[in-house]
Length: 407
Ligand SMILES: Cc1cc2nc3c(=O)[nH]c(=O)nc-3n(C[C@H](O)[C@H](O)[C@H](O)COP(=O)(O)OP(=O)(O)OC[C@H]3O[C@@H](n4cnc5c(N)ncnc54)[C@H](O)[C@@H]3O)c2cc1C
Image 1 (spheres, rainbow, N blue to C red):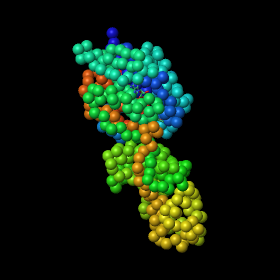
Image 2 (cartoon, protein in one colour; image 1 turned 90 degrees about the horizontal axis):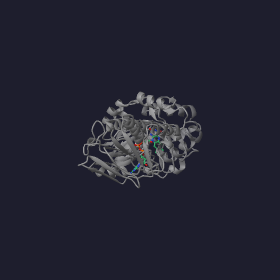
Image 3 (tube, rainbow, N blue to C red; image 1 turned 90 degrees about the vertical axis):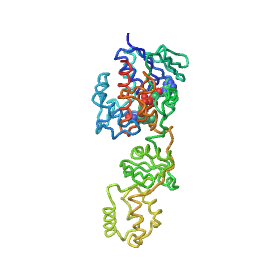
Image 4 (tube, rainbow, N blue to C red; image 1 turned 180 degrees about the horizontal axis):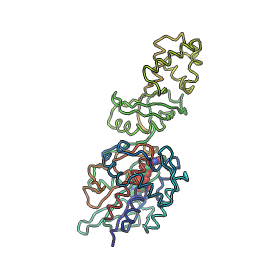
């Protein structure tokens, strides 16, 4: 007879772990605190579920387990993930390497996982928040206690997620369970989140979306550059390039460091080319008022804001603007500095960075503190960039933990 396994947490990682454990011969129970499994999957990719990416590698992951992630991902890689979902019945859509279900419905991914759980006879206990998990060394069994359901198991897979989007069920519960077995938790911080900034001017430009390059400075040092569609909000910055730097910013803030982002609204220009561009424009349109002179450069609200910050009136003729003021303006277009004071919080974050310290888990995702206790998904101190990387981690770590726990 196969092993008896409990998976705690019925999210992307937990369901995948349960499927692979049962495919490997184990009898599997899932304990899920929500009244249904996979709630978070439904909100991924704006309801379309960007479940993976053709461009994969260690550089897309961060945390104490970034290198481990790479090795786990190679055991259950993107082709295997595609084959897995295809075998469940999913047609796949490739948008410039970003992978989605062809239905464009995240619910497709969840439904296919649910049907496979049922096919494999996995017992799904919903409405069962596990608060108590203990190990009986004599019997070599885990005792799992939910609200009503309970059971004895040969192995347990903790797949409770992190702290992001707690309305979907992941609120740090899993960390407390891991701590009961002596695991160190790297303090979780929101990642893939919008950033709150100190300046008061954001209300003026709220709602603007534009192509921009963001450079993240920690204690004055540039550490990360991202380009893409920036969204300006009434409290700061959002959009994909902001998400990509947000985990680093959040961690630095948690460590008490100064966090500054330089926004280039002219991302194709560098210092010299930016100067040349403005000089040419001045030669050609110097007689215009600054309002007209700047029209067509970027979004009008940004022109207005940067003029104000440079201390130049809109009605001023471009050729009459003093050289220093013009230089100030040019610098603002190529690098408006904004001080980051916080993130939008776990409620609005897509993932949390931090979690179970990966130096305390083996290459098979088993705890080094407790034999037969495994981890999968966001509960581990591994977070990916935006673009399908976090779900790929959930599938890969789930498959590996499930297969290993069943051995
Ligand atoms: C709005 C949004 C959009 C996203 N879009 C994408 C995207 O397009 N592509 C991408 O790759 N990633 C995306 N992500 C991130 C991705 O969804 C997560 O990284 C991934 O779902 C994590 O899977 P998980 O199974 O580890 O954790 P979760 O999905 O958080 O699942 C953990 C489960 O454990 C349950 N649980 C927790 N504690 C207990 C307990 N004590 N007892 C029982 N059950 C418990 C929870 O209820 C939950 O169901 C997005 C996230 C959000 C919030």
